[in-house]
Length: 277
Ligand code: FAD
Image (cartoon, rainbow, N blue to C red; front, side, top):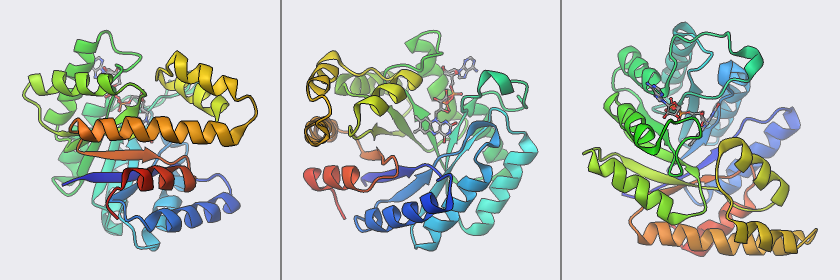
């Protein structure tokens, strides 16, 4: 079975929320397996995440809310788990999250994502299908790739069912990571996270923040377009279509699109790749 899913972040305003509903309607036409909705570490988007989850669910689509454990207490997580269960949600994306320096004093009851996965299983049994994060280029805070692979496998052993990767632009990093994980005997599905390229400044900002490497040839080519955003979008679409095809041809069991709350870039990739609808 192939897994094709799409990620949103919760909007900050009512206008943004209405726009997100419209984007969800448009993307819903391609029938993704689920939409996921991000969650601000320390509960900073708790209500907005819940609102977006309700909105997308009300349109008739399967939704997987993200949960992050750093900065949330077990009691706060338990409340979310029970609420989601009552709403009929049966899939979650379980993360550690990153707290800004000024709020690091918050709860550390669940310091790592593996602790969160273990807690979800303890609290909710097997009700939820649990996705966790994976980092083909190695998580920036990991002591080594070997450590990061070990910590990833610990999440599967704690009860995660499958994983979604951070985005990357080098297919070999994904295949290498999957090989390292498989060598440990861990066989959970690892779905590549796909970031459409539409805007140079945002791409560089996000990539610097999360440690994803933007290859020099991509930076150089985009820089050569200056303010010509149509050329940047066309080039980005070509590069990401090729990357996605290479991943699927090499055995990736699906794709997870970071939509950035825009319909067009994900729809273009979906069409170019001839993904199931
Ligand atoms: P973990 O798996 O806990 O790993 C974090 C780091 O700690 C890694 O370096 C790991 O190697 C290390 N580590 C793990 N266990 C141990 C241990 N026992 N001892 C020592 N080191 C250890 N962030 C949000 O805030 N909200 C979101 O909604 C969100 N969605 C995301 C969705 C996806 C698909 C991805 C890939 C990332 C997302 N993030 C989100 C970002 C994520 O929270 C950060 O990348 C965070 O830094 C790590 O989260 P994690 O769940 O991978 O943490």
